[in-house]
Image 1 (spheres, rainbow, N blue to C red):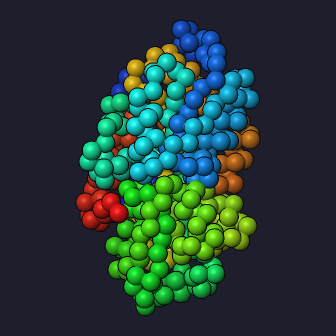
Image 2: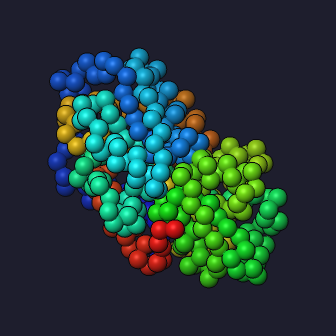
Length: 330
């Protein structure tokens, strides 16, 4: 069972071409937007992958528009607490939600959500896509490379543990897929976000983590954690010395973490178009390109309709992954 690669993104884009054309990026009714600060809910604590992309985006947005894009971190329950808050926010163009792949997993893991990702939100833009990376604390896991690590895991089932951003997140499912595809057992320890999990990994309170490359990048470069494998079929340009899963004998281990921007249902169409226009301007800025490159991230430039089609495909894909892996809430 695999997670979307560039090919899946392109397939989603192609499938969406039958939908109506996108909104005009310069709709006249929203010509004055924004006239005040814009609030953006980030449903995880500071320091995680979502934050790693939300904060540079926020800074660039303020530079372009002269208005703040205020980040409101609301973590908990695999990102669903913040999503619930965002779904109920006023649809006036001044409330946005920066979610992630985790939110397409949540419907299969949390049966009693009080919001519907596909009905209560309007997809605006896919912001970043990064491969997940297997990282370990080198003081706790004495393995020179992936081969030595895998031998250690197989020798001592259950001895090693891995932190995640919470039950039902891509970090969690990446671990379940790893166990499934390698025939091993490692213990899952859920946190309230990738930031706290990563800090505990660095501190030596957990052994390992399957993390989005965006939040781990600076710590790998600083030597605080060690990268043993990047998911997928190719090495990442930002970390060319880290082998990919395919070359390590796991050709089907492809887990990508992506981050996107939504607005509450009812947000005016002309304002939606203005937000999308500003996001694309941000993505074209040299400062943003440099940050994304340093974190091994790509910007899949999908239209709103293409992003909506992609979300729908991800909800179905992750439902199948959850069923096949037997993943449950901890």
